[in-house]
Image (cartoon, rainbow, N blue to C red; front, side, top):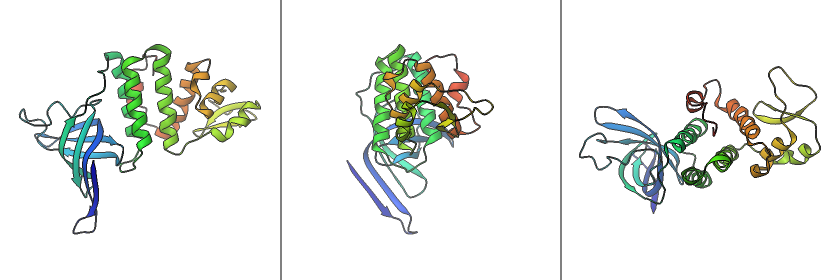
Length: 246
């Protein structure tokens, strides 16, 4: 892999990425035959690229610019939206079942809503790859655990951490989610729901497999994530809330 950051004639950073691992998070039509795709990569973070001619039948990108397909990509450019120049199928990932696709689209929406472009994190890319692998071969509690672990890893990569509160949680008290954090309170405010000591401990320490009730952990993380995504409800969750793995 060869990657470079140069400067164009206006002094802007010119990126030239070669053989960069990537997954497509989303794609939308652009002009008559092209697409604009959002990629997640280990060395460049989330990247927007123009895929010129992608909708032509003869396009070399045809069948590749889809979610959950492991790719090696080349892209370049100095603007916020780069130009995709090559994409190759990397392989090594089992196809997702229709049920698993629901969870995978939820993961994509989380990344799109909670990250910013050009903020690289190899750890987040690895966590994303791992959750897709787990979605392909897990079900039931193990599938739910995979999603919860990804949510915690994503939050942690964004600077959210509750690990320092673990000892305080062990001491007891009334715990709630307030302003996106686990907080020990004297009394509840309107709409707040108590978080059990077991669920608070599991989330704070990231030891989710120790939680006796994963549904409560899911609901705690839902309230935390809801604070950070704001008023716009996650589309995947709103549309497919009947799927218990979410």
